[in-house]
Amino acid sequence: MEIIKGIWFFVQDQILGMKWLNRVVGNLLTSLGVDLESQLGAGLQFFIYDTVKIFVLLSVLIFGISYIQSYFPPERTKKILGRFHGLGANTLSALLGTVTPFCSCSSIPLFIGFTGAGLPLGVTFSFLISSPLVDLGSLVLLTSIFGGKIAIAYVVVGLVLAVAGGSLIEKLHLEEYVEEFIRSAGPVDLEAPELTTQDRLAFAKEQVLETVKKVAPYIVVGVGIGALIHNFIPESFVQEVLGGDKWYSVPLATFIGVPMYADIFGTIPVAESLFAKGAGLGTILAFMMGVTALSLPSMIMLRKAVKPKLLAIFIGIVAVGIILIGYLFNAAAFLFV
Amino acid sequence: MQIKVIGTGCDKCDKLYGNTQEALTELGIEAQLEKVEDLLEIVKLGVMTSPSLMIDGKLVVSGQVVSKDKIKKLLRP
Image (cartoon, rainbow over all chains, first blue to last red; front, side):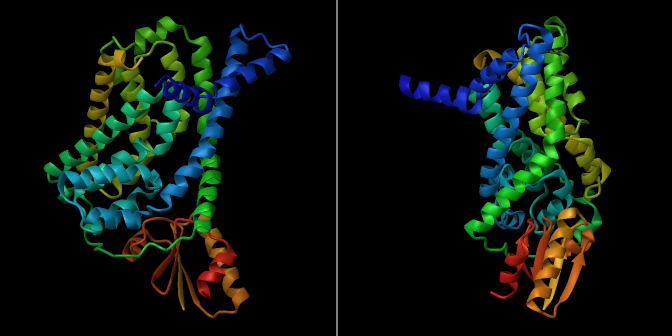
């Protein structure tokens, strides 16, 4: 048992967390004459360490994830989902959302495809909630920074939110608030192309290059903000505004996070340094979920496919769900930290 | 032969279109090459990711830019 525990902590801290890299960066900076005790020096160390770590993890991760994802193109997901009903369909939809390649820019064709295929509205929404919120990448990155327990808890509550949110939308019977042109599109069944291993590897490589190019600015900005918080914002201020014991911290974090558009990879360094400064665990998770699950650009996209009322209900359900999750984690933080 | 390059006018779609054009020229195949950019048209085809490539109504590439050589193989299996 002790051995397994030892191996796990080695994986968590050294392979995923890359604690050794922090020391390497520290030594390098010291040999260059930088004082690591100074605010600037410590900030610099955090910035370099975090940027390198996230880019390395990101590249390895996206490669692996894309390879798995190449087995689940949306055309196939749609077919698999068509065979299930009720809560089972919502659950499966949320799970498939975690492995299907998806970004807000493709939400409409996807929405139309799913609805046109006759999938219930709730199942589609379960997918729409889980897809940006929970993915394999965030699981690994969260493990690297917050440890395995929190990462798994994040994924589980994210999936619960997707299933519950989708089911609720189903129950409310909002089909009439889907734009007409989507309902009239009708089902088209398309065979997903057969791929060879070589095709999948090429796909994975392309995804890595593309994702790194796309999220690089978010990561640099995210780590920059993280470094600032890390070294210049006083702990008392963070605790006062975002402390887990403050009732307003969760709604505040959610409302700041929702309109923001950033990748989960850019959000994590900010969350990391806020957490280190004493912000509540639930507060931080609420912020991350707000940033990734709901954003202005994706709302504008979705508005093309659904009428304002359904869009408002969708945003409402997700926001309330995130706030509840925030309170839950703040209350149960002692289990994780 | 009817070939459709499908995507809402992104860089990747142009790249796939270019690769397809080159493949056709090199193979000397006479084909009807078409770019589908209208969202509603795309949806009607049942395609959900871009860029995609369709040959005679069959989806052969989904959500990926593929090389000229790969397209050649798809055209002449």
